[in-house]
Length: 137
Image (cartoon, rainbow, N blue to C red):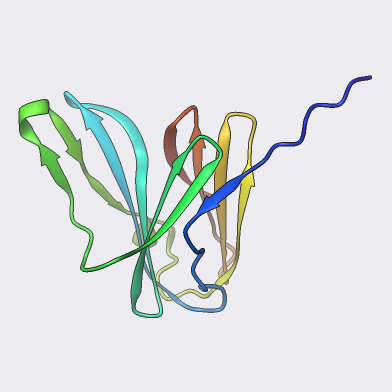
Protein backbone atom coordinates (compact mmCIF):
# COMPACT_ATOMS: atom_id res chain seq x y z
CA UNK A 1 0.00 0.00 0.00
CA UNK A 2 1.40 3.39 -0.93
CA UNK A 3 0.95 6.49 1.14
CA UNK A 4 0.01 9.79 -0.40
CA UNK A 5 2.38 12.66 0.26
CA UNK A 6 1.51 15.02 3.09
CA UNK A 7 -0.52 18.03 2.07
CA UNK A 8 1.13 21.32 2.94
CA UNK A 9 -0.54 24.64 3.58
CA UNK A 10 1.20 28.01 3.58
CA UNK A 11 -0.07 31.12 5.33
CA UNK A 12 0.86 34.59 4.10
CA UNK A 13 0.26 37.31 6.67
CA UNK A 14 -0.64 36.99 10.33
CA UNK A 15 -3.85 35.13 11.18
CA UNK A 16 -5.91 37.45 13.41
CA UNK A 17 -6.62 36.83 17.08
CA UNK A 18 -10.39 36.33 16.81
CA UNK A 19 -11.18 33.30 18.99
CA UNK A 20 -13.42 34.24 21.92
CA UNK A 21 -14.48 37.53 20.32
CA UNK A 22 -17.96 38.28 19.03
CA UNK A 23 -18.44 38.36 15.27
CA UNK A 24 -19.27 41.90 14.16
CA UNK A 25 -19.32 41.19 10.42
CA UNK A 26 -18.79 38.34 7.98
CA UNK A 27 -19.07 39.30 4.31
CA UNK A 28 -18.20 37.19 1.29
CA UNK A 29 -17.34 39.00 -1.91
CA UNK A 30 -18.31 36.99 -4.96
CA UNK A 31 -17.07 37.32 -8.51
CA UNK A 32 -19.26 37.29 -11.60
CA UNK A 33 -18.14 37.53 -15.22
CA UNK A 34 -20.66 38.58 -17.86
CA UNK A 35 -23.46 37.92 -15.38
CA UNK A 36 -22.35 34.37 -14.56
CA UNK A 37 -21.29 33.55 -10.99
CA UNK A 38 -17.71 32.29 -10.86
CA UNK A 39 -17.01 32.43 -7.10
CA UNK A 40 -19.17 33.10 -4.02
CA UNK A 41 -16.21 33.93 -1.75
CA UNK A 42 -13.47 35.44 -3.91
CA UNK A 43 -12.54 37.51 -0.83
CA UNK A 44 -13.97 37.15 2.70
CA UNK A 45 -14.14 40.10 5.09
CA UNK A 46 -14.38 39.41 8.82
CA UNK A 47 -14.90 41.95 11.59
CA UNK A 48 -13.84 41.12 15.15
CA UNK A 49 -12.75 43.51 17.92
CA UNK A 50 -13.71 46.52 15.82
CA UNK A 51 -11.26 45.57 13.02
CA UNK A 52 -11.87 44.21 9.53
CA UNK A 53 -9.69 41.43 8.12
CA UNK A 54 -9.39 40.12 4.54
CA UNK A 55 -9.11 36.41 3.80
CA UNK A 56 -8.31 35.12 0.31
CA UNK A 57 -6.57 32.18 -1.35
CA UNK A 58 -4.24 30.80 -3.95
CA UNK A 59 -3.62 27.06 -4.30
CA UNK A 60 -2.84 25.80 -0.76
CA UNK A 61 -1.97 29.35 0.25
CA UNK A 62 -4.11 31.34 2.69
CA UNK A 63 -3.70 35.12 2.81
CA UNK A 64 -4.63 37.27 5.83
CA UNK A 65 -4.61 41.06 5.68
CA UNK A 66 -5.98 43.94 7.73
CA UNK A 67 -8.62 45.97 5.91
CA UNK A 68 -9.37 49.65 6.40
CA UNK A 69 -12.89 51.01 6.00
CA UNK A 70 -16.10 49.13 5.19
CA UNK A 71 -16.10 46.50 2.42
CA UNK A 72 -18.36 47.48 -0.47
CA UNK A 73 -19.40 45.70 -3.68
CA UNK A 74 -17.76 46.97 -6.86
CA UNK A 75 -17.49 46.26 -10.56
CA UNK A 76 -15.38 46.75 -13.67
CA UNK A 77 -18.12 47.60 -16.13
CA UNK A 78 -15.86 47.67 -19.21
CA UNK A 79 -14.89 44.02 -18.56
CA UNK A 80 -18.36 42.87 -17.35
CA UNK A 81 -16.85 41.87 -13.99
CA UNK A 82 -18.81 42.37 -10.76
CA UNK A 83 -17.92 41.70 -7.14
CA UNK A 84 -21.24 41.42 -5.24
CA UNK A 85 -21.33 41.03 -1.47
CA UNK A 86 -23.28 38.49 0.62
CA UNK A 87 -23.81 39.22 4.32
CA UNK A 88 -22.99 35.71 5.50
CA UNK A 89 -23.01 36.94 9.11
CA UNK A 90 -26.72 37.78 8.90
CA UNK A 91 -27.51 34.76 6.70
CA UNK A 92 -25.86 32.34 9.17
CA UNK A 93 -27.05 34.10 12.34
CA UNK A 94 -23.50 34.50 13.64
CA UNK A 95 -23.28 38.28 14.16
CA UNK A 96 -22.92 38.80 17.91
CA UNK A 97 -21.83 35.19 18.43
CA UNK A 98 -18.38 34.41 19.83
CA UNK A 99 -15.94 32.61 17.56
CA UNK A 100 -15.25 29.29 19.31
CA UNK A 101 -12.44 28.29 16.93
CA UNK A 102 -11.11 28.46 13.43
CA UNK A 103 -8.66 26.30 11.53
CA UNK A 104 -6.90 26.44 8.19
CA UNK A 105 -6.63 23.11 6.37
CA UNK A 106 -5.06 21.87 3.13
CA UNK A 107 -7.31 19.82 0.85
CA UNK A 108 -6.59 17.77 -2.26
CA UNK A 109 -8.04 20.56 -4.43
CA UNK A 110 -6.71 23.56 -2.45
CA UNK A 111 -7.50 24.64 1.10
CA UNK A 112 -10.24 25.78 3.43
CA UNK A 113 -10.82 27.76 6.58
CA UNK A 114 -13.46 26.47 9.00
CA UNK A 115 -15.05 28.89 11.49
CA UNK A 116 -17.03 27.50 14.47
CA UNK A 117 -19.28 29.83 16.46
CA UNK A 118 -20.74 29.72 19.97
CA UNK A 119 -24.26 29.02 18.69
CA UNK A 120 -23.07 25.81 16.99
CA UNK A 121 -23.03 27.31 13.49
CA UNK A 122 -20.11 26.62 11.19
CA UNK A 123 -19.01 28.59 8.15
CA UNK A 124 -16.51 27.09 5.72
CA UNK A 125 -14.64 29.07 3.10
CA UNK A 126 -13.13 26.60 0.65
CA UNK A 127 -10.83 27.17 -2.29
CA UNK A 128 -11.09 24.37 -4.88
CA UNK A 129 -9.03 24.70 -8.05
CA UNK A 130 -8.64 28.46 -7.44
CA UNK A 131 -12.40 29.08 -6.99
CA UNK A 132 -13.46 29.99 -3.45
CA UNK A 133 -16.97 29.48 -2.08
CA UNK A 134 -18.71 29.62 1.28
CA UNK A 135 -20.96 27.12 3.02
CA UNK A 136 -23.06 27.64 6.16
CA UNK A 137 -23.46 24.44 8.16
